[in-house]
Length: 635
Image 1 (cartoon, rainbow, N blue to C red):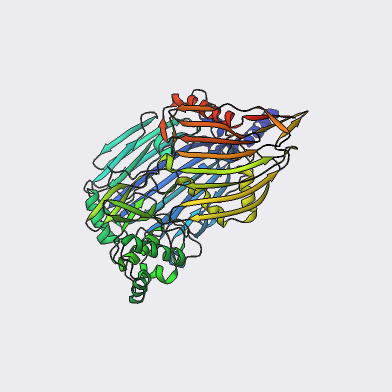
Image 2 (image 1 turned 90 degrees about the vertical axis):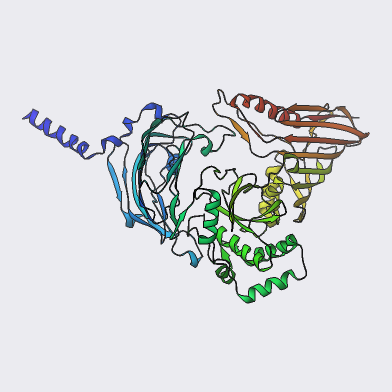
């Protein structure tokens, strides 16, 4: 009987394992996939079935083991839907570390809400997402979702790996399509990853990728889309917003987009047209007119944040924006286009990838691309670009969201790939002119004017709309080298015509100079000291990039206490490399007055991994010299 009871007890404890999802046990994850990983994708399978020009079904099964809190973003259990795209089914099951089921989440348990708050015109655009708070780590989520859409112009891209610090056990893509729709694909970054093409026929495409270790994000890494593998897909015969399309070239695509998607969207009331004509008055110059219209749009409308594709690809009618006073990037750009058209200024609807990190429209792959829309005004053989979603950005200014990238302009006669403004390094300038005096007890008092333009303007002009507290936080971070900083005066000048933002600040602080016996020591560079620390990376694997260069010049006069003599001054220092140029010098203008001059030009560029240590040392030398000190001796 003892053996019978033992067997029964063993069986009772063993039985639950038969109801486990044993394959999801974290014990089965190879150590190589846990290294550097916050999450492990056990399976990511996307099955796409294009049954006709007007119908596409795609199913996602994504099983993710989350190892810690930082891995939560890898779950990606979210779907958008609207009139053209429906969710056929959606569910998720949560398992513990051993693969025991914790919770089953059905459609009704997902959060379902409007994709846009406060905009009734977009009420059909909704988002469904999983909101799950774990009680312990690790755990596993098995997420499955089936979508159906009539929009076949936009086929989801396949990313077997799409973020850092996440490893992939298995990723699969299966695509089925009729052989008469002109299916096409473009592969990226396969060479350094284990990606196998399983099937490639006139009606089917499939890939598989296994055991991809987690990639560590290295300082100044390139963007994911430039490093990680992915596949773009498209059709030559497609449907967008209920309209069939056929485009093998960008010219054909643009003509179709203009006639079928944008046609009929810029009609305005006679009252609004008359108002715009009265507004521009006797102005004859097209750019002069455009500035007046742009200012009107900025004052009248507000931006509702929706990406291209959410709320449809077709912009809402200009008359609706005129009535409601709001819209997304598509709507506001199209509305501005309509207002410009009313005063005889041509402008082109322009599609691109908007982000601080630059991404081009793939010029050799004709398809629906991009996540943002702006407006382009042709001026002879040049272009002026308008960001129509901002209520405060200067006319024609692009940094740092839509600058220096290939974009698609839609013309009535076709489309064209052009490149937006490239803000040159030395035009991204910050000029600092000021003075400070240091007293015999080490206190500092002074003022400075900082003028910023180019891409540096974008980093500063928001200061004028910030609260007093936020401004104080900003300057205490900016001048973290000055302890006990007191801001005595802050004023701004924002010249939008010149795209020049000036800060005028008066400051004071005690104990800037350190007193030791009969000596005083202080850092001469009080107002623009680089103290960054470029992380050392041994055996760096990837190239690195400085996306935007910049140029700082400083001239600061320093008044010394009269009862001190100068014992030592930093020497003139000059540094030149492929990454930029740096120079400092101190001129003794009078016995108790010094003039400190500094310039730093950092060049934009993409560099091989082998150059990284040289770059780190270049910046380290700058930080060390910016911390150079003056020594005074009491008389």
